[in-house]
Image (cartoon, rainbow, N blue to C red; front, side, top):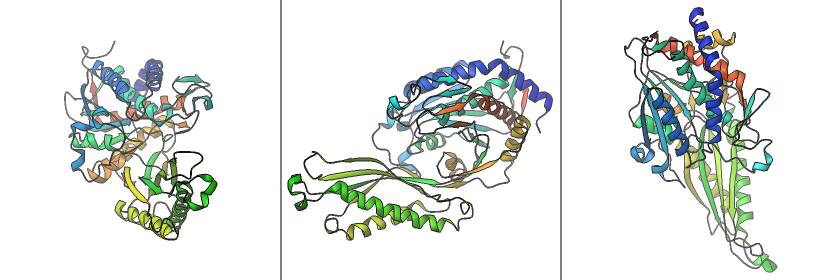
Length: 434
């Protein structure tokens, strides 16, 4: 349990800072940091970090050897040179504790029709203790929490006695290449905490994610003689039904998984984008469907890819036209493994103590059917990957929002975790903030 006097000291410091934290979060939300458009926010964050005296490394995905790593995902539609990553490092004057990575992503998914939001999606509107906006929940609130946890320590006159890397990355919503790039850039620590919005729970396990594009051909004819052509959109619909059948079979098998046996239908399939045809009065000659499907921890990405390709091929063979004009599958975006944070790590124990001290209850755990970046740290680089952060609602939905009262408690819990994990010492008077 963190020292009660230390916790009171941190709490008083955060009380003085919280208005600034809310303003910081609101400013982040006002940046429409969609995929490929994150650079203005990243530049703003780099300046914020530099003003705190942290050493800032601003680089692009073109600056790291992603192509040489087997877990890099193929990127489509953006220039890697424009995908900006920021790593700010707070070096310890004296090393006595354990080093830490604090990581959060700043990319957000499209907001959809703005008229379907109660408040404009990038206005950072506050009502009844909630901040509304695209990214307010997923996961700019977590970025604010980890930055202001560090500020809380400084405001309390305390300095961590271990090096800490504060990382803001992109591509979490599409490939994960931003997180991977920080590791390829050489940043390592004894633990990593990703402040995704978990509602004060720790993510015990997450599924993997695959993205693929299904392309189907057709024969265009005038709709007056539609029976003489072939409608690519309708053919794609038949293949989508086959993929739902494949998913149902995968979910029946998931009932035997050690971590997901108690989760109903953990494999989620989604046809998310459809394009097709050239003219309303012609049978469409082509159709593309961008799809997402999950996989369980322990499943091999290549094996799931093979299963999907087989399911599509079998469905095509049953169609008179597609049997002679096979559809194609292009793998782009996520090729992400599932991950389990095995119980028993010291990093998790320290975080649980901090959570208990702040929230007055045990830290719960969640098993999620979505992916996050912890897999890179835990699976590939042997760094315990803790996923823990504030509470909100509406990830990827209209009226996304974050609970500001919970954000404050989460910030305090992360500050207490840093103090315990990294150790702290008194800041020299010349470095203590006014």
